[in-house]
Amino acid sequence: MEFLFWTSVALVGFSYLGYPLALAFWTGLREAVAGFRYLTGGGDRRRRRREEGWPSISIVFSAFDEEVCIRQKLENCLALDYPPEKLEVLVGCDGCTDHTAELARALGDPRIRVAEFPDRAGKATVISRLVPGARGEVLVFTDANVMVERGALRALVRRFQDPGVGAVVGRLRLYNRVRRDYEESLYWSYETLIKYYEGKQGLVLGANGGIYAMRRLLFRPLDPATITDDFVACVQVAARGWRVPFEPEAVAFEETTEDYRREFGRKARIGAGNWQALTFVPQLLDPRLGFLCFSFVSHKLLRWLAPFLLAMAFASSAVLAARGMLVYQALLALQLAFGALALGGRLGAGGPARRLMSTAHYFVAMNLALVVGLWRFLRHAQAAAWARTARNA
Image (cartoon, rainbow, N blue to C red):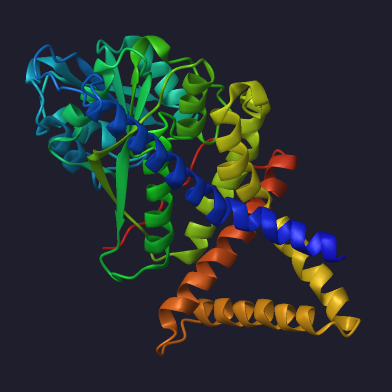
C-alpha cells in the first residue's frame, strides 16, 4: 500500500512539477552552453530575421452557426499586418443553420472564399476538405471565435525561415469579461509556460486550435472521426522528424464561458479526443523518438492517467490511515481538505480563500472530465462534431 501511494504521488508530481522543472533546467543548460560557445569564438547563435520574401498564407477555419461573430472574425483576418496579395481566408460552414455563410460573403472581399457543407461533419473533416483548395504555402489554422493580434502572421511565418520547422504553435490568451480571476487563468498560464519551454526544445506537444501554422505540403487529411484535430495534426508533423516551435509573439484571444456544464462537457470531449489521438499516432510511445516520447509520456499520458493515480493514492492512504499510521492519517486529512476546498469552489463560496477554492475546483473538475472522456472514448460515444459554446453577452 505504501508503494502504491508513493508511486502514484510521484507520477502525478512529476507530470505537474517535475517535468516543467526538468524542461526549465535543460533549457537553461542549453542556453548557457550556447552562450559559452559564442563568447569563445563560435558562430552567432542568434537567428537573423529576414523581412523580405514573405510566403503566401491561407487562413483556414471551420464555422458552425457563428453569425454572431463571423463578420468580426473576417474583418480581423483581413486587417492583419501581412501583404494583402499573399493572404486568403478559407471558411468552411459545417452544416450551418443560420446566416453565417451569407454574412461571410457579404463582405465582398475576393480574398475570402466560403465553402458550405450541408451535413454536419466536424472540424477535422471540414479543414481536410478546405486544405486541398488552399493556395498558400503556409496554412494558418484558427477558430471562428478567436481574434488574432495584428502582427501574429509575420511572427508565425518568420519561424519557417528555418528549413527544419514544419509547424509553429502560437500563443492563445484566454480572457473573461465577467471575472478577471477565473479558474482557468492560472492553469492556462502554467500550460503556456510549459509550451514555451517545450518550444525551446523545438517541439511543442500539441497545438491549440486558436492559432497554429503548418507548411501546406506537410498537411495530411485527418480521419473524419478526429476529435482533437489540432493535437493530432501537429504531432503527426513532429513524429515525421520536423520541429514544432512555440512563438509567443503570435498572439490570439479567446473568451471563456461562465457555463460550467458546457465547459465540463468541452473538457470531457477533449479527454475523449486525447485517448483517441493515441490510436492515430501510436508511435508517440516509441522510445526511439527521444524527446517526443519523453514529452508525450510526461506532459500528456501521465496527465491523462492522473485521476486514476490520485484515486489510487487516496484509497491506499485511507487503508494505511485505518491501520493507525499517523503519517498517512495526516496525508489523508490533507486530501480531504483539498476536496472540501474544491466543493467550496463549486458552490461559489467567498472569503479570503475564494481563489484557492476556485483553483481546487478547477483541478478536480478537470480530472473528473478526463474520466468521463475516457468512458466516452471506450464506448465510442463522443462525436467529432462539437457543440458551440455560448459566450457572455
